[in-house]
Length: 138
Image (cartoon, rainbow, N blue to C red; front, side):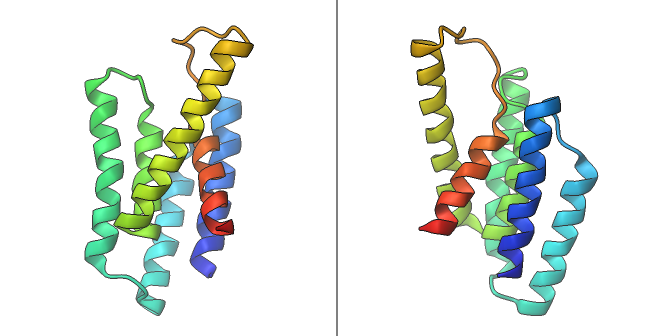
């Protein structure tokens, strides 16, 4: 339960940063990762391999950032590495898919109804935050 609140608070903070400044504070992410590791030492509710597997998805996002030359920001990959540390592989994959679904839905609405350019960049972490809220509710 404590881990859920820590991750929710971190994602909420990064959500506001991403909307306002289109970047995240790495020290907040590192602090949250340290808190997660401390919780893991105390509670031991998932294996270290599951945590590393969850972080792998964030690493793939970082690789995509490099290969796509900035279509997605590196902060998004770093945050997915953090969520993988908290959630493990399966839950992080579900979070990733749901957040991509929300971002695609919003992009479709913005292009069709608000006449936005399809090349316009949108902050992604708010969709990640929304997806995590949905997962917590379900």
